[in-house]
Image (tube, rainbow, N blue to C red; front, top):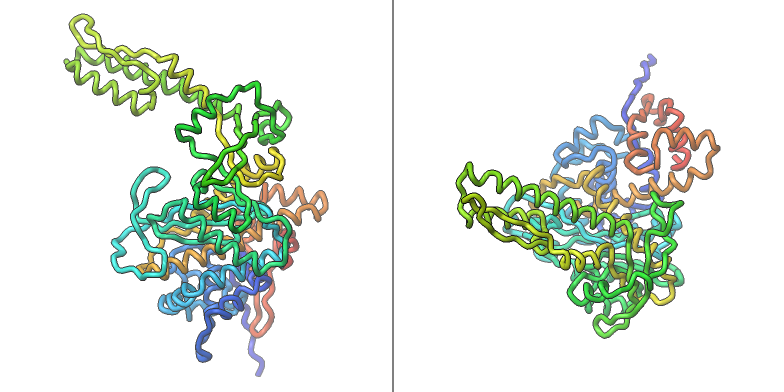
Amino acid sequence: MEYERELVIRTAGALPVVAKLAERLGLVEAVDRFCPIRSVADYSHGQVVLALVANRLTHPRPLSSFLDWGDEFAVLETLGIAPGKLNDDRLGRSLDALAEHLGEVLNLVARRAIERFGISIAELHWDLTHLAFTGSYEAQEEGYPQVRKGRTPEQTIVRQVRTGLLVSADGAVPLLGESFDGNREDTTSVEPALARLDALRAALPEQGLAPLVVGDSKLLSAANVGAFEKRRLRFVCPHRKDGPMKRRLAALEEATLRPLAYRPERHKQGEPRYLACEGELSVGGVGLRALSVLSLDDRDAARAQRERQLSRAEDEIGKLNGGVPAKRRTAEDVERRARTILERRRVETLTRLTMVEKSGYPRAVLERDQDAISETERLDGRYCLVSNDHTLAADELFAAYKRQHLVEGRFADFKGPLAVRPVFLHSNRRVTALVAVISLALLLYGLIERTVRRGLQTLRADERRLLQKRIGRATGRKILDQLRTLTAVRVRDGPLRLAQPRPAQQLLLQLLEV
């Protein structure tokens, strides 16, 4: 008797793309090489890590919703993994195993990405972010980054883990991720990242000129300059605006500055917006190149903001004086409130506050200190870039620094589309491994974006217009959103097929070689 064949329809989304990229990177094999498992297990640690990475890219939710993802998406059909087998304990065991070999696994996958996708590491961008946690985290394992109280960019103190990324300028691909204790200083996190970069470069063919590492001002310290010199690596970063640097910048005469070739998008056809001159300075006994820069846009913005703050302070003190008769405030009370206004508006050093009596009531009188304002204006839009590279032209060095937004954009993806938060893990070992899993997902995310952008030039004009209409600038998020509705159809015992992709989806799958 012939039975009617069963028709299975599941949401595929971007899973076929993730599976293809993971296969090109040898992701499963890379994990299994360092994290072997008993032969009786249903799935290897590499397969579980692939499922975790795919989950982040297609259904970024807390791990507690892992089974819901398996019910909705064609995980078994595309990845060959039955999510129902991956309960909390199984996921936890794989995270534990991965945590013991993070460096080896991440470096191997990064090396394969560089070799198999032709990514240049001539310019890399480094920065740190923080992942906040709640709970006490009292019993933590040694040897793994620990959840500690640390200061955030918003100057608040929270329990956190610090995470750094090295992102290639070629396609903004996050190649290496590194986690640190929550109270780790930015300057002391650089050398461990450089050690990871050393291990990666040692496994690659000779690539000519050493990479240029771009970072923020916290990259600059005597120890870090020594680390770059020892490894013969190049770097560029801003110098902190400490007292000596402020005096150096203020002393620059604008007439001595020459235009730089860099143009922001909004001023492509306009006059030069950046001026600079070169000099030298020493850090840790190493002679460095100093590029002093004046940004006309930053100068205009700083002066406009200062004028707004001064005007608002004047208005608020006027309102304070107007309320004195009704509320019968004392001179001390009026002065205290007036100084609070000046501090909140950050203009206390630019004004002179005096108290007078008028009609029997205390009044706060505010005057602008023009000398202090003029002195402050000397620093508007001025900063200094420091580098140990003496070969690049000033225009090239400055353009590399202006690409630092690439790593900042990847942090936005890290916490946005990939939803690294909230993290509900009690073990700092598993926290470290999960952050590494999300770093791997971010690597695939960057490869998807880079591959589509580079492939756009191979399409016909009408095909490019169609994709640009659907995904605009071709960000990873828009690409994955466009693929989200892909449906997979399978007849029992038959092959999986994608059911009638839309024209834009067909083009994306073509570019991604799926």
